[in-house]
Length: 298
Ligand code: BV8
Ligand code: ZN
Image 1: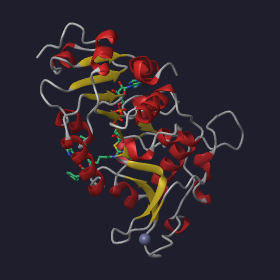
Image 2: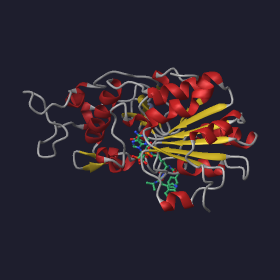
Image 3: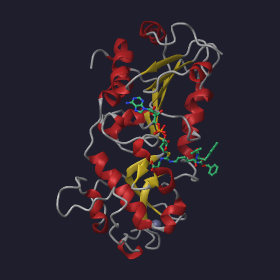
């Protein structure tokens, strides 16, 4: 179905925004791209010669927990040295201005919270790099907001800024260089059950998202019609996150508003419904402009 003519008109979007009360956002890696954090599908989709999606699984951790911890140690280091951008700030400002705004994020980099996004208007669907949990599925150990860098000594190489020229730096990203050997005994045991290994508090592929959180999200969506769904910097490939925008749609009421660097292609436009918007560009620039009538100039 073809979108309206002004599917990319900011003025038309501002009119919709002025008549909107309930707003939902679904965010992906593209929101943090301008903060210097690689996305999954871009060049950043590869770490050394591994696809990020291949390392983000319980099987990979079982096979080689040292390798997977180096991967997460590196991403913790990058995220700690990154900063929220005006895209994060605009969403946090919208939350402070509109209590009927709920922000759902697939990002595990903690940048929403570092932008002081009100916690009760934010749901981290896939967990956080800075939460630590246990491999023992019967153990409920969860440490929140652990920012130790490195998390444990054996992965120190992952916390070095990767400038290949500097002597003594292990070029972690260069697959031709061997990785530091890390054994199972190098990995800290769970302080609660003493059995399991400590692992990143993220949701891996093949693992369920937090049931209580998803119930909460579904209740928020089905409580009343949603006026606007902002789909920001995501390729909408990973489920169940990718299905939320359409589930939140109430025909004739909801505008699904895509903000993505990728230019709108005929297929993308075909997927749109009347009243939807598509803004091609950098989320960091577009979000402050799109939300300006509500949050002011940031
Ligand atoms: C589950 C945490 C029950 C870890 C992540 C239905 C159909 C098919 C498959 C499935 C299905 N249901 C379940 C599955 C399986 C699987 C899945 O979806 N697979 C995909 C690959 C097909 N889902 C699961 O396993 C989920 N669990 O369903 O449990 C179950 C269990 C078993 C079997 C059945 C059911 C768990 C999924 C969560 C996995 N964990 N992250 C970690 O981060 O290490 S997912 C991870 O990848 C991210 O969190 C994110 O979700 C995803 C990456 O996607 P994006 O964020 O969108 O990033 P991407 O790079 O792809 O795109 C960036 C976009 O931004 C691009 O469009 C680009 O153009 C744009 N962009 C770039 N720069 C900018 C920009 N836009 C604006 N401005 C810019 N500057
Ligand atoms: Zn445990």
